[in-house]
Length: 130
Image (cartoon, rainbow, N blue to C red):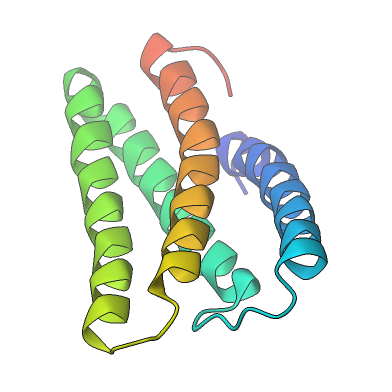
């Protein structure tokens, strides 16, 4: 396993685990009576897997075409955003009674996953070792 992938796991796993614990605590503590269509664990797994694939793609593009890395970051970020919007639209179309709670959960997880994605992409773009 390459150093990039090991360091990527070192960056992503603590952020995902800590934010999952905090998010789950808040949900169970303050919103215990609210039913959600998607569980927090599934949302974190899906969104952080997409983030991992994006970062691997950015690293791949950086190795082959160094001048196209920023473009790859933007394109892969837009694809990730499209998939998150697709989850929210799917909720809206399926007539879920509590779309607001699921929408807020998806938005929070998306924003949390965006932080390590941007930080790692900046390191890759600057040419520094991850």
